[in-house]
Image 1: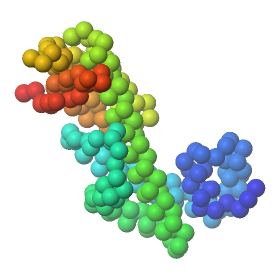
Image 2 (image 1 turned 30 degrees about the vertical axis):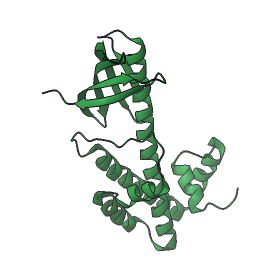
Image 3 (image 1 turned 90 degrees about the vertical axis):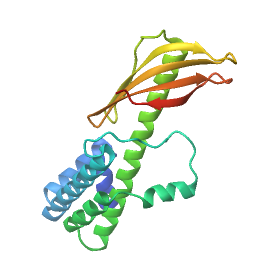
Amino acid sequence: MKAIDDSMLMAYLDGELDEATAGEVEAIAANDPSLDTKIKDMRECDALLRSAFNHVMSGAGKPVVFPDLTGPHTEEEHKKSISSTPLPVALAASIALLFVGGISGFFMLDSLVEREFERQVLLKKKDAQAMLQARSEALEKKLSGTEVSWVNPDSGSFGVIIPVQTWRTETGRYCREFQESTTVDGTITVEHGVACRSDDGSWKVRLRYFPE
């Protein structure tokens, strides 16, 4: 087995190693107090970062509006989104730095922050994709009053879309009012909207509003 470096330790903590290699890491750590302590520190650091990101993403229990993650984004927009990372994340990262030291500490922290940020963005993108698919099915195929549910097992987010009524515009375009309930990080958001069928067969949301 090759030397256990920080990259291998992070892969081990993320569950990316195969069972045999992970077993070797655990066996070596059992007989190496310094390595065992390092793994425990990395776990604590990782847990702190995950907690900070979950707090930011969930809006501390308040309903939040997530950006459209399904469309293309330019490199400039991507950099802008990263530079606007909320303060709690930076604060948590500073605290987490206390658990690690030296050059390897900075390397581990930077990698953990980047991985967790990418993981959270991916989860939200999967939420958006599942929601969009369920909404399209509900508006295209289901009668008014019929529920269509979606769930992202990776994030635990889920929701229900219900078509409410259907009509045709003066130009002959079909439009439908719908109700959408989503549960993200334990926060339930209920809103209504109006979507119209485009020439290519897709449903575009034209209006959103919250019930009283």
